[in-house]
Amino acid sequence: MSSQAIPKSQKAIVFYETNGKLEYKDIAVPEPKANEILVHVKYSGVCHSDLHAWRGDWPFQLKFPLIGGHEGAGVVVKLGSNVKGWKVGDLAGIKWLNGTCMSCEYCEVGNESQCPHLDGTGFTHDGTFQEYATADAVQAAHLPQNVDLPEVAPILCAGVTVYKALKRANLIPGQWVTISGACGGLGSLAIQYATAMGYRVIGIDEGETKKRLFEGLGGEIFIDFTKEKDIVGAVIKATDGGSHGVVNVSVSEAAIEASTRYCRPNGTVVLVGMPAHAYCKSDIFNQVVKSISIVGSCVGNRADTREALDFFARHLVKSPIRLAGLSDVPKIFEEMENGDIVGRYVVDTSK
Image 1 (cartoon, rainbow, N blue to C red):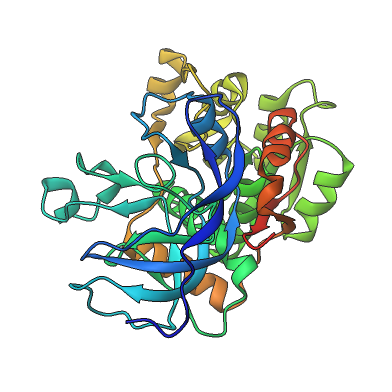
Image 2: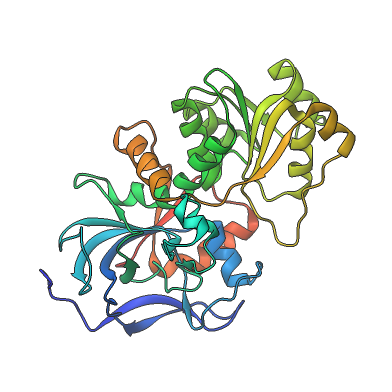
């Protein structure tokens, strides 16, 4: 069933091989499978992972041709024959976790991102850099009817990801968390989730613009890595012994290694950013004597998504976004590669 006329064709950003041309072109509107909903994507965030997918930086087997994007917010316009719990006109969010088997040992305990049958939006499933996209009805996120669609789009990946990472850090209110790469799309949301959860926040990034953003979002201490020669010493001094937790959204291998040294004894280093071909290096003596934990955190499950969206709905978190058109995705990727983006780009799929 459908409450609006669904066109036969639509605009999309498509590529046919890694590092291939990003084509802004007309393609057919997809038909939802029995378990899927069709969403009229109004806005899509642009995530660094989209750039990695296009570049082929990670050992994922991508589908080709491929439409990237995995932070879509829009309106349900059609339901697959087996779909329950949705109706046409509902607001829906499309996440990176498009579909999982829901029956393996990982899905059974909520570790859906480790499902061996995972279907990833913008990787193995055409994503949100198009006007109409399909999503598994179980994994798609229900959005409140009064939600701001452009601002909620980044919550569906960046927000959920950093919220889950903060949970993985096992902190209690009043403790210090350091966010390495604090003022990009992930970091700018991590600052807000951390403060809303009662943590004290140190941000590591560069420049006065990012410092102002950090402070405006509630961060406490900003360390400019272009000016501070001893990052490790600066964090230890500011926190009187080291950060209780670290969320690494930076894509610098050196920054990740440094975080293992300024982490407080019995603290937790959380790895989120995934620079290509990089390793997390930790001095074994330091790690054993201080008994620090190094953990990875990959997006979040359905419960994490619901919780992250609740922070947003209660206005405890906002998305510092810059609006652009769908046709601007190639230029946005260039800015990403140059490290020029403050906050998060969100594209209007109609432009």
